[in-house]
Length: 89
Image (tube, rainbow, N blue to C red):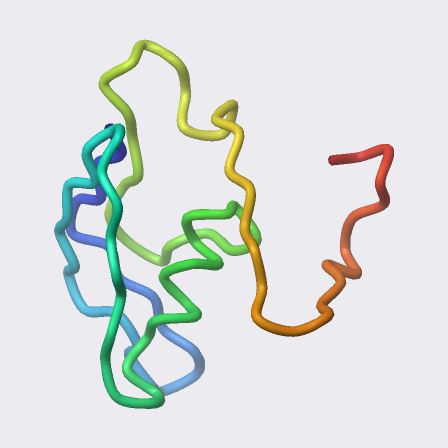
């Protein structure tokens, strides 16, 4: 289970996520749908650890720190995470 509590993410003067709270239960599937520019990609980047929230917390109840979870995104197009090498993942 992943618990997002009061997540806030701000880019400059634009608040993209404003106190978002959400519980993602293990073994369930979720569909994230929302208009363009509403924070979907930002939320996924936070979940993948590519960015840190400006406020709030992301945690688990499994006893493992959130940063140690294995999350494997599947993109719709060819995409590289330039900040990482295959050895760092």
